[in-house]
Image (cartoon, rainbow over all chains, first blue to last red):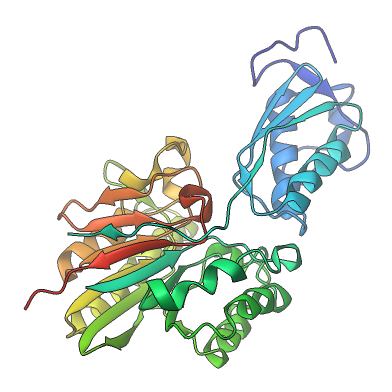
Length: 116
Length: 239
């Protein structure tokens, strides 16, 4: 990761694997060279999370800083939570994933609201 | 009162099998009707929907549903609709269903709805055909919702949506994506037609409680918002 990457969630640039150029990022792959602005890395990760059938999550918050990817939000199952980490690694194989996703509860409610 | 159970954004998949059934089994004791506010599946496959239908199998509570954007992902919305109907679920899209609960009638009018944004920050049917189609789609669905709600002659009326009709219930969603989360046209349709409650989902980072500009209660029942299998609302009947 280049030194200009900072602790801000959207800043700096990240080395990307040559393979798997993401369709959500326009422009010829040859132009990417060594570093990709972090904005596009976030877009690539979100695109993978949205389009992989195991997850299909449009609402995961993705933050990239230095070589760490932080995921926040909620998913219905533990399987999908784990799959999110795996999918991030398809974009950034060597990054650290801080998976803060929570699995939603599915208990029956104990109260009823009077709507007036 | 009529007791309404509601939930949206269940995003059923093979990995969710069995997660909701224990809670759904309590429905006969606590609810008169179950409303499903779209995004029943993860990517709109019939296998995913069958998982949800298995969870509901044998639960003797009448049910109405709208589809959500995820349910359209595999271009199989008509098949999903047929499967739901075969299972006894009323699938609403510019249409309505009437439930008789001990002599009290509840009408539910529904549409998936669509985006466009909210007043002062919304798209217009202007310019490129793609932009006209985007906003025009929402306007058409809102018009059909208005008609379906207006035609109901029931003691109580509920509007069932997937997309949001007001920004109140969008909560912590980023304002930049509000136009993809709902439209004021849906809220306007409900206010003009009248209703006792509006149910929607779609905004996972939203808030449960809101109100239309006309004063009608709005509830966002997206599963990540309510963090339980469903919410219960008691609607009083005035005689």
